[in-house]
Length: 458
Ligand code: PMP
Image (cartoon, rainbow, N blue to C red):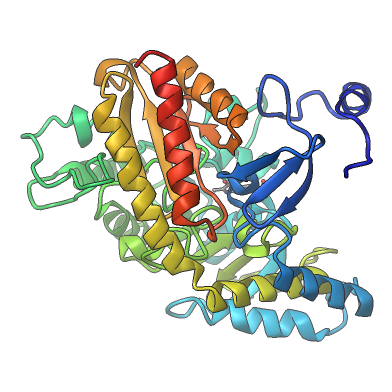
């Protein structure tokens, strides 16, 4: 039985001593006191199916026994040295992590959060290219440090002060709400874009001009808004916080070509999409057929332990050596032991394959819900276990049904299913569970979502 603070005691302390902007989910916040694999338990020992994984972070399950043992063993031996000394775990882990990367992406810098990883990637792109301007996609999220708040291109995550000087947010290749592709496509109606479980047109097929039209925006922007050359281009492989936005196939390939022609390097933010979550590939960028110059990663890398990394080529990594670079906790022994054990679980339990099989099943179940409730479910999209359900009125992307989304989100919690919510209008359910969820789990979650939609009268 749970014997800690009561909900009321914790709420009272929170009001007085925790920063008031710290986001909590739900009208009445949840107090979670324990986790086991895909399950969470509150202060009354109610059990919840965690379909959001602490924001896509608990990749292989809460307190997974193999990861837990690795952390315990390392804690007993050595917690901390900083990298002024060698310690074995960082080297073993760096070799294992980079063995997962294609091409010449063979060198890692370790840090503690996604924001720090993106900060470092910005710095390296500028030092390596000698250029300053950086492109990021509108609707993207890359962090909240002063540098990365500039990369982040969602007004609800930006304060009214100078941030990210030199960063240019460019037109988002969003085929659902953007000018090209999906229901708004200005070209002839697309016949190949809609596949089971992927309602949004991301086809990039020969009749689809959306990918090229969006990529042209990059060229146009570089020509008009910079001195003609750029340092780098940041993109998530599927936008996470922005509401599971997928790009038209072929877009990133074309974007990378344009950016490289203009002297820049290409940076893949794999903080949400990496480590097999998309099912078909281990890295999200691989689903676009590109190899970046720099990859940033956090969240799922450490199954919830503070750990993040930047992986790049030896040439780009070397640029930092012109000065001293330092990060007290980056690559600490416990984080590296946890990161290595997390990769081992991914291999031993083939969580990528589970993402593919169970994720595709869930996408199909949700697409069935979209078809049965077209007056309120506008789009179901995603890949593997990174899924979005967008609520709009009467199939009109310009009429986001934010309140319906909020109601479904609350009602699912009451039935023991924790979901995420996002998108600029807060009208997209974000579903990204630990990659060990089962068919039965996702069938239950889908049934709970449909029950809520029906209860709301749709
Ligand atoms: N990049 C992406 C794609 C993210 O989703 C996030 C966090 N939501 C970050 C970067 C920033 O990570 P952190 O909160 O660890 O700084």
